[in-house]
Amino acid sequence: MGLTLHEKGQQPTLAILTVKDSKRVFRGNLDNFLDLIQTGERLGMDVYVVTTKDFTLSGQEMYGYRYNMEAKKWSRELVPSPQVIYNRIPYRKMEMKPEVQQTIQACNRSSSVQLFNPSFFNKWTLFEWLSTAKESKTFIPDTQQLKSAHDLTQLMHKHAVLYLKPVRGKAGKGIMRIEQITSKNNPNQFRLSRQDNKQMAYSYHSSIDDVWSEWNKHRGSHDYIAQQGIALTRYKERAYDLRALVQKNAKGIWSVSGIGARLAGKASITTHVPRGGSIDDPRKLLTHAFGGATAKNILSRVRIAAVKLAKQIEKSSGNQLGEMSMDIGVDTDGHIWFFEANSKPMKFDEPKIRQKSLERVIRYSLYLINHRRRR
Image 1 (cartoon, rainbow, N blue to C red):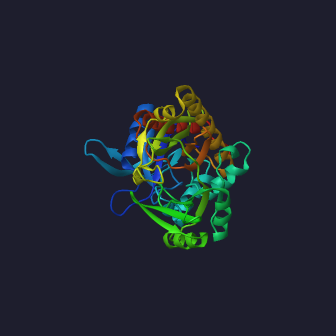
Image 2: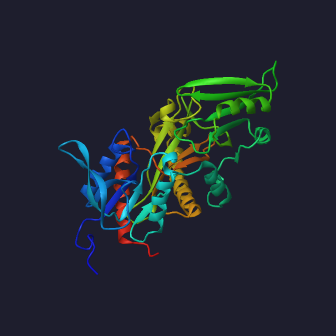
Image 3: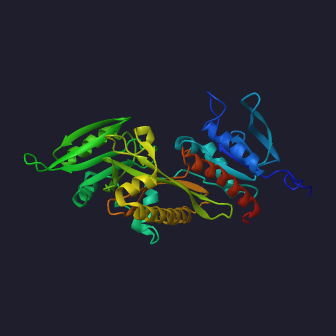
């Protein structure tokens, strides 16, 4: 048998997997891809982009994209078959296409490549996994699938505020909030808040059935979950939550790469930046609410919680995962709550977290090559 390219002393290889695009070379965050390619170069790994259209498991080469620094553009050329595949297909719709699923399943079965993070998470499935596992259930707000007005009524009996979230949502899109408002003239009124880009829209209803029909008008074809509203700590009257980046390190062990904070916009119901939220420093915000010593303690508890949650998600999913970002809330009593996890984290704007996140993707990929799974 002849030597493979890698055994001939070639560099270890990592392919960033995405899909073709009619308007530009391929889909995804191209700056992010370029940063990874440069980080790979520095750490001794050959990184390039491959689309599902060009991807093949037969042969020692395939077509992929490299970035030409002088010409400042991407060029399609023959690249060696990758040893590790980093899934960065940007949207669920694209990932669910049969031809894309075929590529992902083939990689999952193959012994010649290792793929990590094979798919997006589904919010409801995540809550099902986490609320039943003893390691993670203390962090999980009361959550259920929204199937009928009866589900809403039951939850509203238990909680004064509920959040309604699309099961396959992204960046806070489609999130709504219901709260019970009691006043002298109107002892039983419900307010539904929706966010339209950075604007808030409110409607008032005298019964849960009315709320249900109003929600139905705006939900589109999306499946939703309803979740207990948490009294989050605030800074200058604005709620915030923490965004933790959890990645596997050079030893293949889950570890927190960094924690940022996202402060809600003035009247916003979510902390997402595209919905008017802003980035802030978690220690500053927590110190403002709890004092320095307690803030430090909360942050260290958040790190421990994030690692527990990541391990549990990986175990329940049955897939090989390498990273995820998590939205974590801290309530006014200092209790930690899990809100969501994303298997394709967006770029973190905090420079230190950003740098570490790139290095960890490369180092974890090198770890996978050195500890190849036997099938």
